Length: 375
Ligand code: CMC
Image: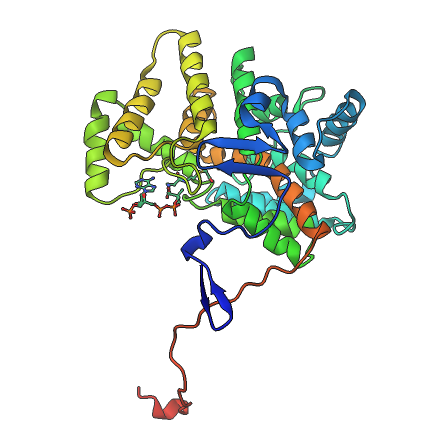
């Protein structure tokens, strides 16, 4: 960072700049990731989604009673008003699912007279999964799918997303992917949420801003773009040609690269193992795994850039029978827990986030009336 007339000039994209202290999570260049002090591999091997969400939100693992209450409150608050579905339906089948969710969250906030009361975040967290699962169906004129009673968060979301019967192992994998998507320190959407929180806007406003930030292909939208790319490659034997031509044309491969992880993304590594096991347990066609592996190897060979979580989450969702446009909504349904943890951390220790900028435009111009500016 350089100083200019008393203002510190940050590198482009704030790369390498710490903008806040946080106790929630930390990723590191050597492939480390901790949530509230617990390594991600430990949580992936042993924890449920609800336990991890409780941990991310509260800074400690729940006792049995806390777990029961937390899971019950998530289920109890998941009912989405019919009026919200009507608003989502009015957007029509051409609407992007993340825009539908964003509109849904805004509607939920507008209809909640207690939108600014502390604790309203739980209502957003529990309803986001319902919005995600219905972000395509409802605007297409189909009936909303509602959460079934008595299932955990991950199973409920999966059964709203697809009618396909998943095996126990597949459901376990889906839950792991949700755990990975839940939180990731100062990523773009979380930073967006913290900026909105710092103005003391309500959590619905912060969550809808988070969704807008998540939509782009450099962030959450990458999982859908990665799947489209893998389907385009189709044959592992074509991976070299595909990567060569993308690199030659200066194109970015979606699902590769990361601002923090330069050697490997620990979430992608675990998802690759899960994908391999999913394919093996099914027997038969392992083409999708071989395509992923071949493109990864070529990319490492050519650019030394590793795959990120989105790259290996995408084929897992694909094998689970989930429609591609729902991949980023799934990311959002999980990340909202991280967003709300950051919303609370920001507001508890608030300082308005209002950086400066370096003006590089012209100065000293004089106004000319419109008639003197030419045709
Ligand atoms: N394909 C090809 N080249 C790449 C890629 C890629 N996916 N990612 C980075 N590079 C190259 C880039 O062209 C640049 O090369 P050069 O120095 O020769 O100009 C160099 O690596 C540095 O890239 P950068 O874009 O300046 O790095 P960054 O830290 O600003 O970007 C990133 C990180 C995630 C935006 C970038 O890697 C990218 O665009 N990846 C593809 C989109 C993607 O998968 N996003 C999901 C990120 S992880 C999950 C999430 O947070 O949502």
